[in-house]
Image (cartoon, rainbow, N blue to C red; front, side):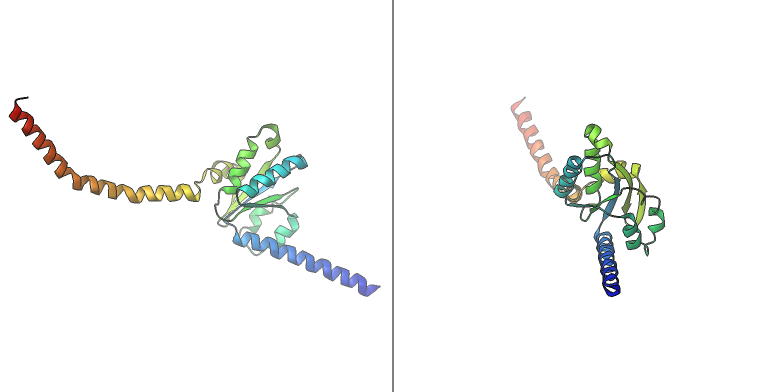
Amino acid sequence: MATEAGATVKSQIAEKNAEIAEVRARFDRMTAAVFLDYKGMTVENVTKLRAEFRKAGVEYKVVKNTLVKQALKDQAYSDKLKSVLVGMTGIAWSYEEPGAAAKVVKAFRKDGPVGEKLQIKAGLIEGSVIDAAAVENELATMPGKDELRAKLLATLQAPLQQFVALLNAPAQNFAYLLSAKERQAKGE
């Protein structure tokens, strides 16, 4: 009987360690994370939120605070998260675009009384803990990869366009000169 209890405890410890390793791996892979309080939301609303996260390529999971604390105990920012990891906590991890989770949360919160129940506790980006206002006002407004690529392309194209315009200017001016001379010769 004692060996069964010991085996059960060992299996529970192994399960907890596996969960901690899984959470740690998510934090290691992420570009940003948003900590949420979903208290007061219905199952239907949480399901809708999860679907929005999936569409945006964001992983969302409700995790026990003690597991998160254990997973992040060796990180420099772990002390700053202790006040955040209280009560019901859902975590949304963005792996490609840092602002993806924050954008989904901001859009969901605008969805009337349903969205108001979803509260942002904090955010985490590049090892820095940011408050709820920064998540909603800064992280959620960060441009995505496609927008950044478009800006970069426009920046790279602008000097080339100016260079081509400068190369064309003498020929264009010469054409205007000929046209003016022609009109002058005709007496216009």
